[in-house]
Length: 310
Image (tube, rainbow, N blue to C red; front, side, top):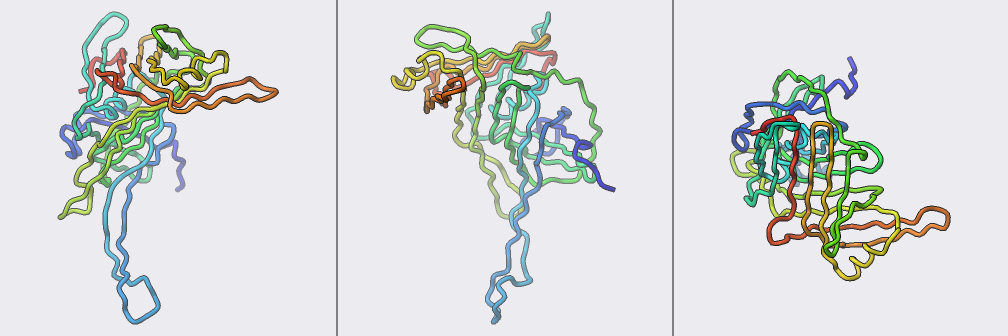
């Protein structure tokens, strides 16, 4: 019997310890796209055997791992999981009133990443990927729903069987978003056509003797960059590019029972491109790079209806 991918499912749980494959709780997360899968690397038999054929019949299995990309709607109840995996540290407090939990997510300076178990139901098979790591996370929106897209690494998968229970999504759209810019001491909300930012942990899988599967995954240097597209109405960003003016940006999403604030306290305009069509609206594309301001590079604060995640 043939199946469509929509019948599948994804769940994510923080590992009790890195690589254990054990979690105390799975969060079922509806996805937009997911191509996480096993990567197997056969080692071919290239030995010379007095014939023209270059592929001998004695190939053996080599490295094994898991990798792929997962894209989801920006849901304030499940987004803390992804941001915590990307940045490494999450601290939760209960606040009551409109929101139940306040989750502050910051960079963990250790090279050891926060890890997860990725459980995938592909209808035909059900697999569990341990030592799951978010290599990159990109948040973006234009005139549609806001999205998170993660590149992930893991160990090669094992068979598993879990029951997935879905909760109601609380999806952010561009209508929930505000982008607030501080330039030369002046703070104002700007009207963006498109906005994206990307966290990159430059994660690398490592292998060791006595196993073909991944031994560990290391986070190397972390970078944060992004892009804004605006109508060309002022020369503020062009001058910031010319003069290397350092700016601050806050991206705020406000829902009925949630609020998310992503703060980059200092960034530079890395690249500027103006678009000046004769018969359409002029726009400007601003590529930016987050800089360490002496205190932090980025942080994410999410208030929602979940008390804690760890």
